[in-house]
Length: 335
Image (cartoon, rainbow, N blue to C red):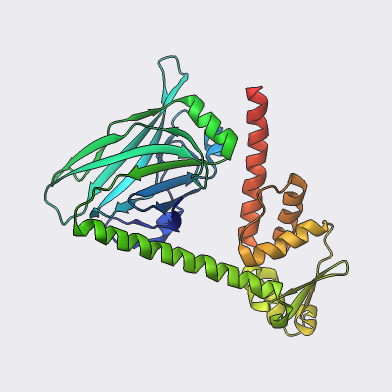
C-alpha cells in the first residue's frame, strides 16, 4: 500500500487554494459535504482518493437530486490539466433509485489553445486505508479533446450498483472513491515520476515522524509545564499545546489572576468518566480518536469539548454521533 498525502485543488486561475480542500461544491439540493482529497503513491501509479465522510447525511437528506464533485487534482503526466470526479444519483422513470453515475472531468488551463489527452484509469470503492476493495470498474480509456471554447469535458458515465454503495457504507462508514491513473513508462518521464513518488513518501514519513515526536513529549513528564487533574489522576501536559487547542484554557492561562495561570493546573470537575478525559488529552496531541469509541464516551467527550471550546474535537464528536445515529437507522431498515 502506498503512502498518503493531502492535496489542494486550484482556483479559477490555476493557483493552489487551501480552502478548496474542505469546501467541496455540491451541485443542487445536497447538504454541504465533508470531503477531502488525498493521493496514494505506489511504485508506478498514483491513486486519487476522494473521501466523503458525511455521505450518510447526504444520502438521508431526502433530496432527490444528489450531484457531488470532488476537489480538483493534477496528474503528473498533465501538470496543466485539472481533474475532478463527479458522483450523481440516477432515478428511473418511476422515481426509484436506479444507480450511481461516476465520471472523470478534465479542464485545461489557459496555456493551451487545443489539446487531446488519453487517460487510462479505473474507479474503486475502498476502505479508508484502501486495503479492502468493495467495488471496482473495468479499466477505462477516456479521451478528452479540449478546445479554446471548450475548456472542460466529462468522461463517459460509469455505473455503480446501488448495492455496492450500501455495502461500502455498511463496512466502512464513509464513502471512499478512488481513481487510479495508469501511468505509461516513457523514458525520462518514468524516472521523473519515480523521483516525485519518492519525494512524496519522504514528506509523508517526515510528517508522521513529527506527529510521533509531538506525542512523545506527552509521554515524557520531563518537559511538562502544567497539569490536567481529574479526580486525583494527573496528566502532565504542555501549556502551549493546551492553549493551541482550547480557547477557554488559552484565555485562562493568559490571565495572570486565574487559578490555572497561578498554579499551572487545570481541574476537570465535569461529570464525565476517566476514559473521556484520557481521550481528550490524547486528542490534544494526536488530533485523532480510537476507532472503537462508544456512544457514551463520544457524548462525554462532546461535553468536555463544548466546555473548554476545543472546536475541532467538538465537530469530530458531533459527526461521529450523527454517523452512529444514521448507521443505526440504516441497519434497522436493512433487516
